Length: 370
Image (cartoon, rainbow, N blue to C red; front, top):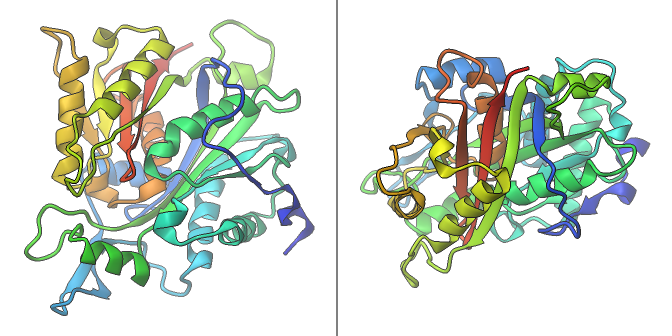
């Protein structure tokens, strides 16, 4: 392990930073490595065409039928090294358009899978991070760290990024989401729970793997002399984010009333200081399991004013598979591309995500043109 990646500066962030500034964030650049593309440009083209790369795997059901997965083609590395490779690819893609940046002053926040799902401990997270950074030959800020909060941890990761941007020497934060379901332990657990899309079960998801990276900075609406500030005047702005807790559970032990997601959406809208009627689209993490689709539909019904317009619906899991903690950053990366094209679903919308454990989050996006 090189000196630049020693665990001495590896941090495990809490779910909520001590101080959360009401900072509007801007996406300066983004990268994505997933089943339909090793970079964001390729993946965006495939996703706009509604393509997927689902394929039969070596994982098998109890009936000896192969499990359908969304995977990249590399077969020479598995385990920690495989996820580290995707992280390195996504970061390299994200930073390929960024010039003259001292990355030793850029904290890296990794939104990672929950330990109870992945069986990971602090050494596992640190090892994956170290391998990825070694491949890049980069040194990041000593405040870099991990947030093992899973799919719905995006809002908390954005809060952490906003808090880090308050540091005197920090103008940018690199948010990385990386996750994989492609290991025997995870596949067998979800097969046993009846949650994978296999023969005889259409109410399930297709497991995948991915990494996404988003370079964030403070959004600037006025005219400032800073070069970093100038680059944010035409960008996708993250103007609000909110979290909620849903008592309902997927197994039906507690019915879902969509209260957690409703709270998250309302909190995000309030933080953005925009009216719900200004929203034109929503990006959903629905993955093929009806529980989350119904919950999202109920939450939208709760927050939509009487006579409100139906929002355009965007999904990515039907192209890249269920990628857990990588889903939120992948959404941000994808939207940062298409919202400046004729295919844009609108100028303002939100994305929402849900965890199995009840955590819910929503994030408001808006296009800003200088």
